[in-house]
Image (tube, rainbow, N blue to C red; front, side, top):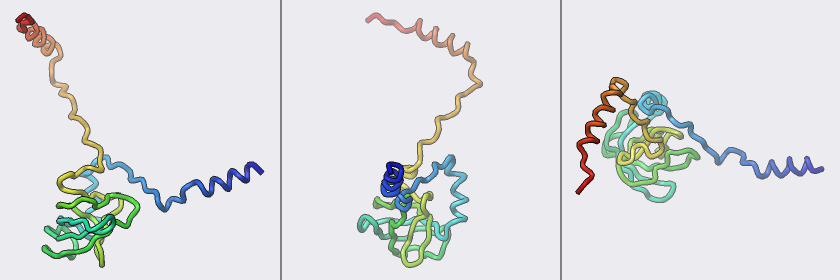
Length: 152
């Protein structure tokens, strides 16, 4: 009886997955961009004005792919469960599909130009310079330490 109760409770407490989205982190957005460009129907730069939480207006500024025209004003919707979410006014690079409304590609690369990688982790630190002679660095450090006067 206890096992049946646990199973029934699990069914009602475990999410069914329709409201959950986990976008895999992109290891390299430069490599992902041409792939997404081929995948989506429309790629353009637009000036976004937020209307409410789920709707926004876009004035098309530059078109890279699709049938949109520069200066055209279209409506957009945040209807997907996965980001990116168009949630700030300003210029955006938008990857997605336009029919009656524009919808960004879920887990896609659409982003606000002012904050282009808000959804991505920062780039890795630069690789160390392995051509530097460690012994020379130590000698320079010792010379500089001797030059510093700690008395006032």
